[in-house]
Amino acid sequence: MEPLSIAIIGCGPAGLAAALLLARQGHGVHIFDQFVSPGPVGSGLMIQPSGLAVLDALGLAGEVLRRGARIDALQGIEEHGRTVLDAPYDALGHRGAFGIGIHRASLFAVLLEAAERQEGITLHADHAVTGSTLSPEGRRLVFAKADPSPPFDLVVDASGWRTHFDPAPKGILPFGALWASLPLEPGDPFAGNLLEQRYRRAAQMAGVLPIGTRAAASGPEVAFFWSLKADDYAAWADTPLEAWKSEVLRLWPDLAGLLARITSRGQLTFARYAHRTHPAPVGERMIAIGDAWHSASPQLGQGANMALLDAWSLARGLAEGRTLAEKLRLATSWRRDHVWLYQGVTRLFTPLYQSDSRVLPAVRDRVLAPLSRNWPARGIQAQLMSGLFGFPLAPLGLALPDYDALSASLISASASGAPQS
Ligand SMILES: Cc1cc2nc3c(=O)[nH]c(=O)nc-3n(C[C@H](O)[C@H](O)[C@H](O)COP(=O)(O)OP(=O)(O)OC[C@H]3O[C@@H](n4cnc5c(N)ncnc54)[C@H](O)[C@@H]3O)c2cc1C
Image 1 (cartoon, rainbow, N blue to C red):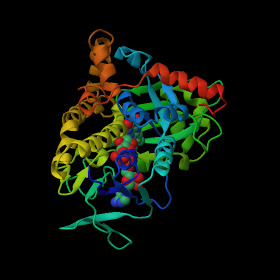
Image 2: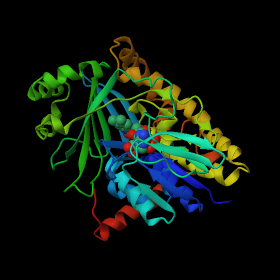
Image 3: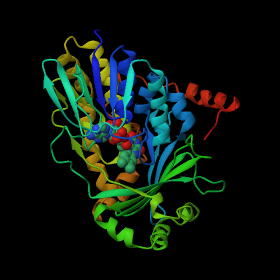
């Protein structure tokens, strides 16, 4: 394959994974990000088996597991104590499968460190991209504060859902969430290997996700989240913190110890989500991947995993197509059905957990919950959660990791004294 000069906009999971894969193919890669010094914002996320397949193929699954926390199931309990969501990964039927809760900073660090070790990648911080121009020499990037770039053979837009390259409305959802990364202490009443959630209908939701140990942290942490409508954010900001905590504790009294570790509003970040799909992810010398192509609420925990799959598909497309146009067409064609499926399913499921409806959470608790305990719904639920619904791995030539070997590598890392979560 002839080496290309490639610009990647954005240093998130999509951009960093694409940079690694494309540089390993021999292309010259420049990543441009708006941040002044590298660092992700936000708290935790879930790496699903689908995304772990990509990290495994990159040789990074063991390191991600070491810095994150193994998650064996998702458990949701409604306000009266009934379990209405019980989704274990072992219902997948794949030996030893699990998810990984991880701090964004840890995932970012694993990918960035690998990119820094890889020849052929140059990172340009403080380069906010505002557009691009096309000429016979290639596509140049236009920056907010610098001269335009030299021409590139290909520009990869991995700048997330606020991308400048999709002028369509962003489809911002009414509900977002407050997030905080908090230290996990001995005696905390959390299972440690579960993503735990509590619901009051669909209007209130609290969650706790173990996210392992960040390099900068002194011990393991959890991501705490609390569902909040954007329209209610101003009222929340005016409510005394203790009054808000009392409201959360009415739903989930066991959070008392964790909430006591929130001493200022500054520890909480309000995140909003957008549900949108770029109508034309491929243009001339240009392709959108990750959230820049498609974004959704994180209710199914798929965004970073979809981003990793997109990056893999792009690298495979570049390796297999004969012309640049064909390479890009192949890259999106292998992902299109999976993207379409998950955009649809996430749109359907989100109001069951985040909405003002009284009917939808009743359907969730009285119809879907009992159904999901039995065959075949139990397996389908595990596939959905794992990012494997619609069989996305086969067209990409990927396979699920050997979970036994991964777990064994964690045990041997711990025996050799490497830091553990
Ligand atoms: C609160 C929350 C919880 C989530 N939980 C999960 C989860 O559990 N599991 C999961 O898989 N996903 C989850 N997601 C979604 C996931 O975070 C995203 O889908 C994922 O980060 C997308 O990766 P990306 O690389 O496409 O974009 P991003 O991670 O958004 O990265 C985009 C990068 O581009 C840079 N950038 C943006 N604009 C410009 C510009 N103009 N010029 C230069 N650089 C630019 C940004 O600085 C950033 O570094 C969650 C999202 C949120 C908000």
